[in-house]
Length: 223
Image 1 (tube, rainbow, N blue to C red):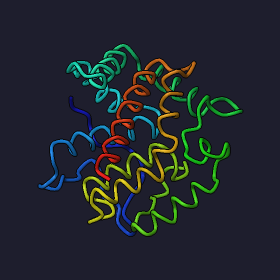
Image 2 (image 1 turned 120 degrees about the horizontal axis):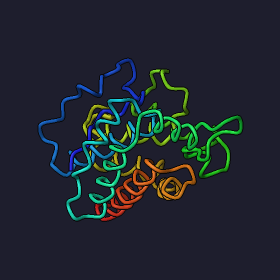
Image 3 (image 1 turned 180 degrees about the horizontal axis):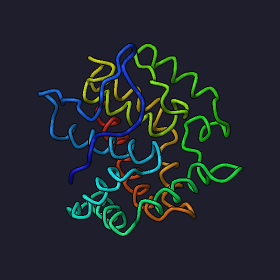
């Protein structure tokens, strides 16, 4: 089960913008954490912007990812659908899901919306305060707020690799996940899984739902 870890999101360490495509993993990172970064990177890349040719090629490479697990089956389904989906169709689907025409897309993938019903609310301000403490800023290349799911997944990727929030360890990852992601993220991925416009993105919703549930359970056990 392989997934690219380049997201295309715009999270970075304050005063420094590392290229996540060339980020070297810490030599001490475990195989389990490597898989976690691959999945966070895949979700961040897929949800940050309409899929590029490169992103679609990454997704198509997952067609043989079925290892008998539920998440492996979902990744394989995603890969098979990506093989059948031209870029134009994938872009149209992304637009219907997240941009929409006039009134906005079918889904609003931000913590503020899921927790309060509105965007740019208290969950975003609390996140920004915690990002400042971690020394994490944004490049300004993406107009989405920091509590967007792609940004949060990219942040988790950086926390695991040590590229962001260096030294916070598993406890810091757990605190960030439980405060800013866990309260709403499974509902979002369930909504993506069942969205009317979702075809290619339906199995991505399944991948996210399963992975985030596993993350939540693992952090609870490690507490």
